[in-house]
Length: 353
Ligand SMILES: [Mn+2]
Image (cartoon, rainbow, N blue to C red):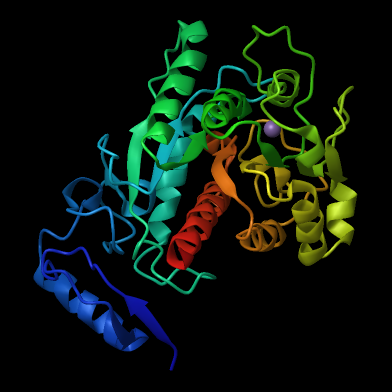
């Protein structure tokens, strides 16, 4: 029987601090179920949780939805990792709707219940304190004010020492996020999972979801020599010497071979990971603004992501989930799983430190 370690079970019934203990899966389930069944207040932990640590269990089909039942709070002084929604979708070229992405991802993340999360085989929140910071205020008409608001609020979260995991929104949001991260870490390597290069021309003022890479290169925010794009299925006029792994290469290579190329490119630099959900084939992510056929499967890209833990990842985002075009939450679940993996990599890093 496999044995998992749990601690800090944050329930009313198990309120006292648990010693770290080793129990079997069946013991664990019976303990937490017994506690849950006896406690009629054991719901809505997005607002009732007392700690940012510990696995949170409640029925997957009910309750206030935060990302993975993390506590909603603006007080993130003690948070190792902050999840933040940026519901901006005014810069798409085709289908709008990614403003509903953050809450679609939160809703889909309810399926990550009390289990030790596959494939990490651990309670991701045993040592990693994670808060859901809610959403950035996005003005629907004073749209020119939104970029600075995103950048300033992101910078404040990062300055407090937290790892920031942002949920888009369209891919414009990565631009102010990259700037905020570079303020703290200096020039960054970029790993971009995407069907599109996002290297279209930009006059420096437009708010566009296809130009963040252009701006980041021109302003020295990212180092092209250490940056890589994975899954590209379109041609933009510029590549800025960023390494491109096209969709057909990604199809031919194994996940391990893709990982080796990513690691060789990034090296020891601080790296930002942006995951545009349209990197995945529309079969795996129909609910997005600019779908492109010929992309990889969710399984393959998760396998790649899983193997990036040795890199110095300093921030990340998941963008372009647009639930109005989704079916059966396929895309939202994929987005939530990508985000969960990003949390998992940081949980492993915290455990190692
Ligand atoms: Mn993109």
